[in-house]
Amino acid sequence: MIDCIKHIDKQLFFHVNHCMKNDFFDSLMPILRDKYTWLPLYAIIVAFVIKNYGLKSLYVLGFAALTFLVADQLSAHVIKPLVQRARPCNDACIRQWVHNLVDCGSGYSFVSSHATNHFAIGMYFITVFARPSNRLWVIPTFLLWASLVAFAQVYVGVHYPFDVIGGAILGIIIGLTFGWLNRFVLCTRCGKKI
Image (cartoon, rainbow, N blue to C red; front, side, top):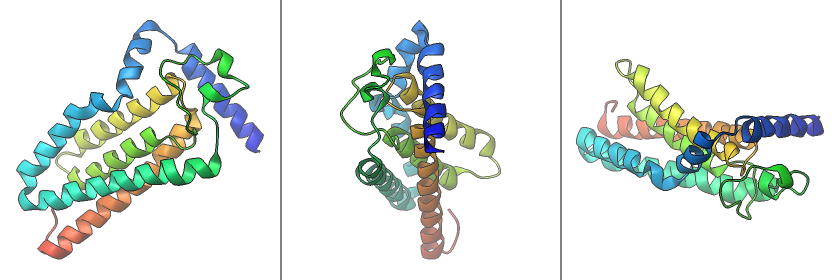
């Protein structure tokens, strides 16, 4: 069963990394996965939180930082060392045909920390920000952002699709947990929902 899953994962990887290969994506995907690309979005979120939440912004941003910290540490320092799956660009069986666009790195592949971190933060802010009046743009915006980062990880050759899917699932669980915890703490402390 595990071999069958690995085979499917490698076939999906080949489809994204080779069959979808084009000059536009070759230029765009390394940029999408770069943490500095998203600094303006982070700045907008921080400014929005401070403007709209006042003193509560300390809780909102504090829980966001805690969400990121837990997601990053769990994915990079607990799960990856336990699983020890080689990255596609370091996998001796396939690395000769991997279309690698960024430094491969020496770390392990499962789960993708990029996917875990971005889905965790995305789901955290969906939980905090989404209301009936704005769900139509808040949910797709944060999910699209995290999905683009995850897809880029596969396209540039540093992760298999199941690495980013596993990271997305882990990130969603972490983001929802800290989002709900944030709302519970603020509701309990302030006597009302944020």
